[in-house]
Structures are given as structure tokens and as C-alpha cells.
Image 1 (spheres, rainbow, N blue to C red):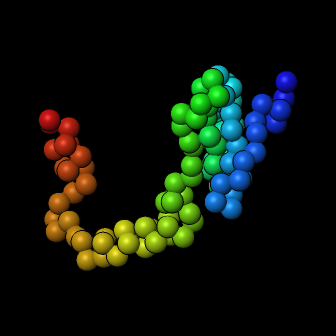
Image 2 (image 1 turned 90 degrees about the vertical axis):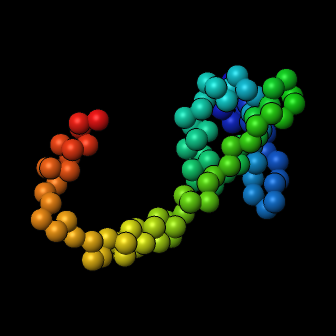
Length: 96
């Protein structure tokens, strides 16, 4: 039995949604996550009853990551340690 033979295709809001049983989902979880990372939606069933759906996150888009990096850079502008040393801050955090 191949991976393609244990999945079914359904249309979901213009995207392709694959259906897979819970046992097969557990067995092929890493592959399913890879497919979800590429934008696919996976529906997991238990004894034919839908119980879960794997969907890509919205923040997985490259533009969101770039926007976040830009915001972090803007926050860092003008922040100075004013005589403090990184090593002192690290050691202070280790005391607790």
C-alpha cells in the first residue's frame, strides 16, 4: 500500500484537502507536516469520522517573517547598554 493510496482528495475552499486515517497519520506524520508546510490541508479521521485537521499557519509566509525581522531591527535601534557588559548580564541571569 502506497502513501498516495491511503489518502483521499477533497476540495476545501479552493485548496486540495487530503484525508488520512489516524493510524496512517501517526505513521507518516513527518511527511504530512512537510505537505502542510507547502500549503496543503490534511484531514485526519478515526474510523471514518473526522477528528482533526492540519492546516498551515498564517505566519509561515516569507513576507510575515521579513516584516517581523524589520520590526525587531526597528525596536533595537537606539537601545544601548550604557556601560553594562553582556557577560555581566549573562552571569546575573545565572544566579537564579
